[in-house]
Every structure is written in structure tokens, then in C-alpha cells.
Image (cartoon, rainbow, N blue to C red; front, side, top):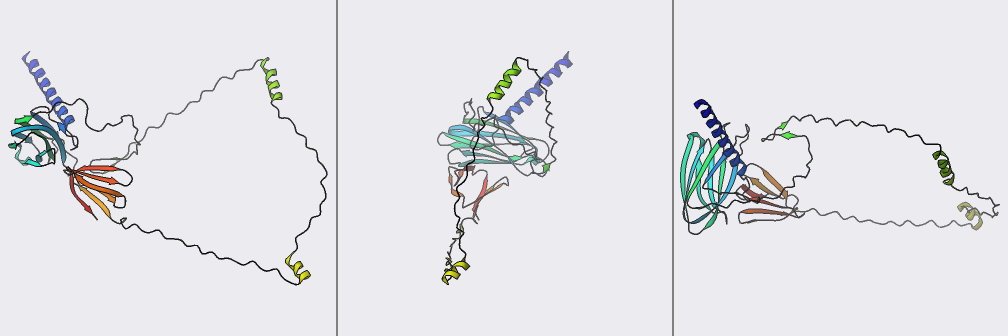
Amino acid sequence: MNDVRDIVIRLTTAFGVGLLLCLASIAQSTDSSFPTPVTSTEINGVIKARDVGDSRLTTYFYEFDGGQGDIFINVVTKNLSGDIDVYTAEGLRPLTKVVIYADIGTSETGRLVYLRKPERLILRVEGRTPGDEAATYKIKFAGSFIAMKPVKAEKGPVVDATAKTEDTGIRVNSVGTILPSEPKPLPPKKVEVEKPKVEKTIAEKPKEKEKKESTKKPVVVVEDFPAETKKIETPKKESDTAKTTGKRPPKPKKVEEQVKTEEPKADPLASIRLVVQMKDGDVIESPMSEVLKFSVDKGVLTVIMKDGKITRYSILVVAKVTIE
């Protein structure tokens, strides 16, 4: 009995831990514009290992409120190399930073943040695991920390689940290597079912003959009448007129028209590009001839194109912006 009870307790504990890890991974947001609200005094997160050769970092964003006074932040990590930063939501002013190395094993540290007035704060966890095992982190809050109220509706943009996307059949991994394509299933063959022929009754056949006779087009008879005879004068040739008058008709003069074609002027901005380089290595290039305006406001880089397309990037994920 004791052995069975121990097995049940272990299975229940493992199921609970797995459920907590799944909930934590679902609640993690990678968009700084829509951070995950912290609704309790503790955050548990997991950062999965990437493919071999993929050097990108994983970034998660959280938001919470802080009252006037000291906020105590305790951080416990395992197998994680990266940084944990705290910013103000308005202006993205940095308040504190924690640098973590995975070679220490389980690492525990703490920070204290003093606020002169109540503010909303953003916590960023950025890093990766050096091996194949996933990295974990646990962050506890105390002091003047204020938990956020749980939000029922998602704050992110609404995505139409019924929208169809074209499947090109090309699959790549996280590094960008093209994987072999899977064979597509053959469409089912259409089976044509012959409809049974219905024989017409004897009473219906005379009706069809009457319809055919009534639908015949009327015959139009055209009578031929004798055409009137007219004299046809043949045009005189140049030789005949020269013989009778002794002069040749003047030749028509050729009028040459000069058509001027204007060459289109080259756009001086066509060779200049706006280059936005991201921290994860991605580079976005746009010709300046197509860019209407770009600016930075409250920590957000906004690029407006002439065709009306608007793209926004958080400066937390932007390495540099250049015009080349």
C-alpha cells in the first residue's frame, strides 16, 4: 500500500510541475508592445534550447506596477546565460540590470529598485542555454510591488483563424537550412456515375415533332433583278496625262516631323537605402525613394512608406539604424 501511495504522489507531483511549466511557457510574451502582465509575486519561465549553429537569444517581456518605495527582486536561474533588465514603461528608462552566467550552475541574486512615485515597469529576460537542456528562471517580487489584474481578453492583435495561407511546400529549420519536402497526397479520383436513360413514351414523341416544326426558321426568298448598266471610267495614268497635256503632275512634298522624346529623370534617392539592423542578426532594407518618414517616439521606431504601409520596431530589439 505504501509503495502504491508513493507512486501516486510522485505521478501527481510530476504532472503538477509539468502543468506549471506549460502554463509559464504559454504566458511568456516576445513582443515589447504587448508584455505579459505579472498577476502574482512570482514568475516561473523556461527558455528552450535552439538548434546547433543558431546563436540567437530568446527574449521575454513582463509588466507590473510599483508603488512609492523599494521593490525587492530575487532571481534564481539554472543553465541560463543572459541578462535580466527592469525599465520604466514610459520612456523605457533603465532602472537595474542582472548579468547571469550558466557555468555557475544554479545562480541566485537579488536587486533593490527605489521608486519616487508609482510607475508601471517592464521586466525583460534575454538569454539562451549553452547546451541541449532547457534553461529555467524564477523571479520573486516583494516590497512596494503591485501585481497586475488578470486580463480576460488578449491585448495582442486579432488574427483571423479562418484566413488561408498558401503552402509553398518549402520547410526550413531555425537556422535557415532547407529541409527535404514531404510528398503531397494525391487527390482522390473522381468517379463519374452514369445517369439511367429514361425512354420516352409514345405520347411524348409527337409533341417533340410539333415543337421542332414550330421552331424552324422561316425561309426568306430573295428575287434577282437586272442591274442597271453604267459607264465605268478608268482612272488616267500619269503617262496618259503627260501625253495629252505635255506636263507631268507635281510630286507631293514630304513633310518630316521631328519627334522629341524626353528621357525620364533618374530619382537621386533610388541608390540610397534605409538599413535597420536588429539584435538577432536580421537586417531590413528599404529604398529611400519609397520611404515617406521614419522617427523614434517613446522607444518605438516607426517607418512610414509612401504606399501607406507602417512598420514599428521597439528600440530594445534594434541594434542600429543607418542610411547608406
